[in-house]
Image (tube, rainbow, N blue to C red; front, side):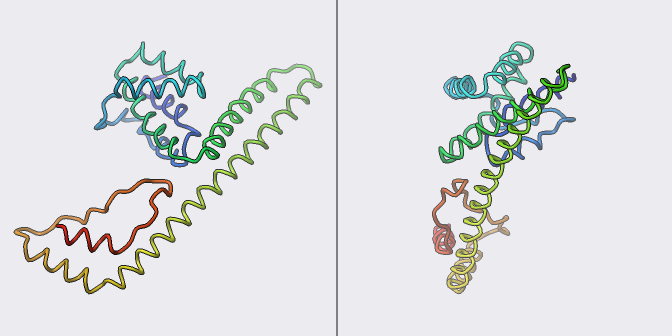
Length: 221
């Protein structure tokens, strides 16, 4: 397998099932290779944290990562930096959701192994037994996936409510915001760039976003 594709596949394996935003890992450019990142490598402490977590929850992926370190140190640094970012997002989830993520990944791995065992079984009785185990495992995986999707939906609903509140408050402070914009423009020597949105914690940890933030931000600029 192409080394670039090997790295991409490894990162996809390492990050799959950890977080709700796992689609980010699936967007890794497989054909162009790892993109340059501001974070070239982790600190020793960060790398230790990541590897210890993988040792406990993802030992098979840890083995692949250790092999990559020997074969391609540059790719290893890129893969661990990418995986550490996903691991940080995972830690922000509630303990209940973390357990659901881990259990789903375990169910996926178990289902895969059972599917291989079913294909290799020669005895009809064994195949039927394995088939039932596979159905049970896939059923467990489905239930966990539903739980995770429900959590994601709740987070989206909370975010939507915050956006609605923000929109309403901006309407209430329209005149103040417009006047602040005017005062700012009158002090600039060149056209302003795009408005920078204030960053905040993800996964619903941000309690409130109000139009008053806009007013305070503009007043301080």
